[in-house]
Length: 507
Image (cartoon, rainbow, N blue to C red; front, side, top):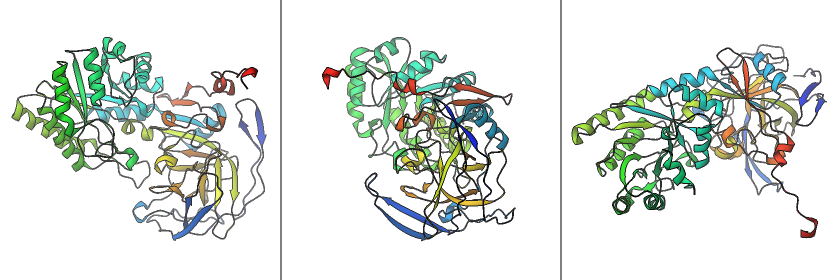
């Protein structure tokens, strides 16, 4: 169907403002295909293309305008879904965000953050519960403040996160550190009240030398993991996280050598949603607790999977937690010890509590014979790396430049703005090296695309400043419905401020 050109739209530039008009009209690609592109070496220009039949979805949205086409999303048979919808923004609010803050912009919803925190605080437990926010998911001070006000504590993954949490108002005693890199300044943190979980034998020895006779937590790898991908599985023999459970004798020997009082056992298996796996891991973790009679707390980590796409499963904390509570009760019968439970949600609290408002800054086609129509955003792996890293699927919702929902649909491959073949917003399911078309509202240059499910591991895990793109601003939609700026957009000078010019005589 022919497209009606839209008027020029002003785009926010970090150094200046310019106006970009729509290009010539382009035809849509209508073939119902999934085209997988096996990436050759980066930027080599070579690729192997294979075509497979698309699977039709169960539900379809009827055409609502002349010339409209509704083509099912190209996906596997278990991912049948209609066009994705906005989570908490209205189309007009998305436009208002762009008008006030420019694009791309992260928008968090305070009501959703508090709602998810309340669910976590209701996790079934037998003898007390501490919920620690895994702040690596998104460490903005405003988010930390929301969770601090809800009564959550902090799970930090680096010494720098500890300082960041303290600056946001948390007490050291309410922060727990489990880290891959033991900070050189850990002693100063411990002296102020920080709780540490040793994640390796070398960390345990370092702590013992510095604080003989003190309390310590031990993070074990129980030999079992769970995750949506291998990159989100942090348990089992393929994971480096924690002390391997078969090294228990060595861990006990070090604790005896330095007269350490083990008060916490920590395990974390990854981002899974299978209650049976959580129950089994909890039982294995409780067995480890029996090896240390002084243990008073068992931390089962986080990794509670949240479905971002409509067809993805989410973890029900009540279902996962009920058998865990029973195991704790049985542990008391067996040992006489009432163990305190800790959990460390990150994704569960954040995933669907944030949207990225972006602009379609270009639209290109590679022909109708096996080609695609590509939407190029002014966002990408610099704002959300998960699709490139995990082949993660994010809902992509079309909004017109006028702040309305499109009445027709088209199929697009959506890519980011980086000069990188892997900057892809629509990878094939479970395959970061393939591309997949996505059916959504029809869009032109200057229209808005909202990336949903962007709360966890997006702003906090972006490829910041790649291609020298400035860091995007963050906004909080308050209870009053007002959009509050919680991080300003970075400018070019801030990107360059730590660079030091090389002397001429050194060249």
